Length: 175
Length: 295
Image (tube, rainbow over all chains, first blue to last red):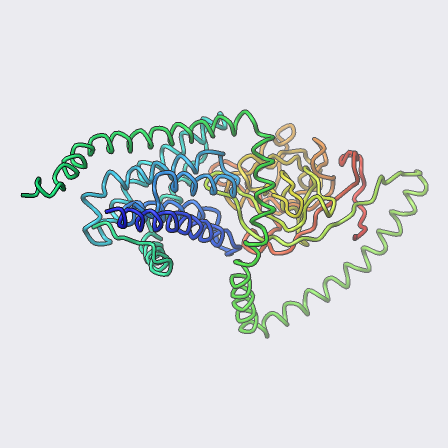
């Protein structure tokens, strides 16, 4: 029992920072000048997808505090409302955790639907906070574009995340 | 039997601790969501601290982003080369025509420049300090859902300061809002928080160019309801002391849903190299002349 606990403990201490660093690097990569109209939306969309997928499938690799750190990194890196990225990432993590029992054992399509539902809940929240922050109504089109992009890129991000998990050998899949 | 081996009490303990663990987990989320809301308030109240954190983090992440974006830049350059190669004959013809037209304009510009110099001498006109240009590379797009910004690879070490105007060869990109040692953040003209005093058309009508997070900012508060027409040139006015006067911004694109929109000269998809315009410490851009001196 002690041996099992020790092995788990060492494993945890390695996989948590490794996963967070991998997500950070992926977010940094997404800020590269892609010459696309939606490039400014990519970091947040990627962060949301990765947090959702990891929270759903590999909860030990990205715990709530990990989701918080990913969001904080997003806030520090981008020019959006400070704290909003943190809030949306932790909300994404929470929603994935509440759906875990139902979605984790099912296929990617179910996860995709789960992410779309979670994004639909988070999009108006972020719009309201951004509008309150600026004391003016923010345009809703970027919020919708963000929502669409997050949903659209989820399968490919899930695949990339799976590859990262395999490379880092951090995953104990939650099924 | 299981109880005899001593494992059952642990199982019982684990089972009985499940509600505690769930409660702890929920408390963790509540704590973290509360902290995130706290960060939003801190971001609103302590803007200087937050900007300092962002500037310092940009210095750390800039080299990593530059390294990570190298393959993207390479792929983009390759795609551009291929596209150019396909249109080589057409492009050559277009450039020849443009060159002929520009040569005619050059003669006209030389004549006007000489005339301008003479008139300035007659009026003893003081053009103000010369602008200094600092070249930089746009290394990443760091906007977000509600912001449009880029990160450039020069900072305090190269004399960059908050508020300096940033241009490409075509026109104004935006202004520096945050400076680190080796990097700086530039808010784009198209950002929703961007307001740029401009002059429109030959009548030099005053107006405000307002970003809306799209590629085409809106022209608002047109002076005395004056008329502006599609194709009218838009230049910075220098009012408000943010941009030097006379920097090219774009042209009037036309009206969409009753809103006058601008077409900027800058192609927002192809910002690679930029120039930061420095008029010197403490200079009022509105009073400064915009004569060119590369540095």
